Image (tube, rainbow, N blue to C red; front, side, top):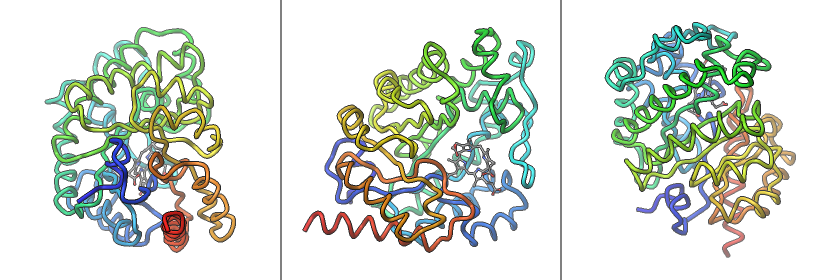
Length: 349
Ligand code: CP3
């Protein structure tokens, strides 16, 4: 059976426009909140293959989506490298800070050591794959080295990631070593996800917008390009989607430098600009403002219509411009997906 997401990303004509939503599993779903409570915390959920599989599949039971994305987090890699991690209620992630060559030296990056922590994630991937309908695509993912490094350097979420940016401006040796370790860890992590059944990979660079010029090339493009080229050697048929948030017109350079099969764009990126500048380079994914899903109704549908008008079905993956918010009413997601199906149905007939 054909898989719309995989087909689109590999250049085959899809049977319909693929749709999935970043952070489609999560707190806006009551059934997720129930399982999370049962697990006794977010990290327990990530490391319990049966529960992680269950929450991964929850959104597909409710909505007519084309892909499942592994339920895990980009911060599992730092944890596996030996950087203590905790998720505190209403506070987000807290990590032990990294800020010197000694700190970086102590971090593990070999596959055997990483997998002591990460192997339950691969078990979750296999379970999800064996429970997934044959027309659905399974997406694996990791954070891009820059974004993951910022969480390690700042010790959690930070408003302007000042220590990380200062280290980048100073071209600190320890930052460059950290990036190298994150590149090799990410390659191993994604490879194990592919071995377990992931069919498409997405690399999330949530904070690449911190960077510009030479620093954008050094800390966003180069590490992602290194990960992509090693994966291409190992798994030439597995497509990779890049999400370099906030880099504006540098999206074209990003796609060229990183050789991605798809580029995920955030909502401020004009879709007519994307149609002119990105569509010939790779598939475009995006880019509805997740806030519009909270409001729902005509506001959401008008914004959706503009995206659908601008981006051709065979080169577009419908998605949000960033993760779904926890305040989102699930009914609005259902309304959004049926609207997209009806739009494409009318366009075909
Ligand atoms: O459904 C999916 O998309 C798959 C799972 C997924 C999660 N996080 C689950 C999660 C994915 C792909 C991520 C990626 C992720 N994690 C990113 C990159 C994408 C982005 O959103 O920019 C980043 C920066 C993180 C780091 C992270 N994880 C933060 C800052 C937080 C706390 C903020 C928050 O939303 O609570 C998390 C927690 C997290 N990751 C949750 C989920 C469902 C909420 C945890 C909970 O249940 O309390």
